[in-house]
Image 1: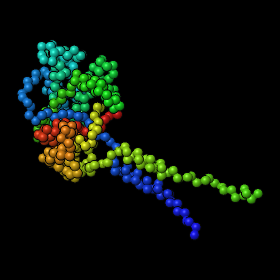
Image 2 (image 1 turned 60 degrees about the vertical axis):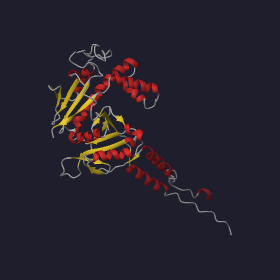
Image 3 (image 1 turned 90 degrees about the vertical axis):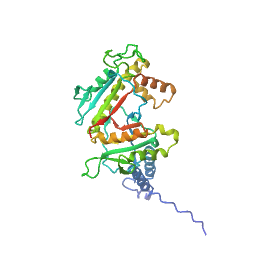
Image 4 (image 1 turned 180 degrees about the horizontal axis):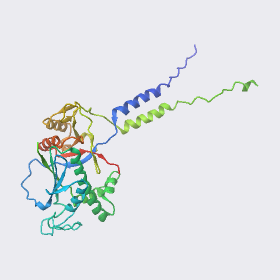
Length: 202
Length: 151
């Protein structure tokens, strides 16, 4: 009896099977990577009462109609205006060296004695109402982030010749300690100090 | 010349032999570059706000996500919280974070982040309640989910 050779397997349906799998993965998976604005909540009990000079605090309030108020008196119509106000406040550098942080030698602000002493001391306090919409709340956070980024970009260009943003982009490919050190240093020059006051209303 | 008489007319069929290879390639691309959807939303899919500078969250297992948004049931006007697969109350937040902590090594716990996926139209009040719960149990790192704006 002649040896029968094995019949060839028909691979015509292979494509169909693969398509089926492909469609399953298209439906069941997502591509997005989560991202957002990082903030740190304050400790539950502050270690002790720390005296903060009023001039070192920039108070921004949002009411339940999403209207903005800065320092309790200045009404803001457009969120974007806050960026310049925040930059002026953080970068003021009014300290003259008799306090513990000393004068800010990289600040380019007006050195107004009634505004913040040093970027390390400048606190932005964000007060919202329970009825404030989340969109408006995040818009303020976003604008504050932009203000800090602009200041960091400026000081980074002065020191290293490149913007802070491009340093952050480099970090994706370059994991060296030197780059990390640079980023840390710039962040320390203009630290993000944003405090969220517990909302009012009910 | 019978040799040339029976010539076929018309175009030859296109070979589909390489089709499975192409599809498999696509399949592998999607398998590698995407991640599984973990949770099914019990609230209306939150419309995230936009922000200029967002930070990417790399380590999936260190993230606990809290969703806040409108209920699927239109008669319920208030904001609803969703943890894992269920809608929940503010008092459930602590338990949710503790459960997530249990899955991790002890030295990883300080790096845990709570990601808030909040609908752009919901109110800050519910969010504030959640934040208060988080402060109580020292889960201080939070991120407000936002989509980056295209320049």
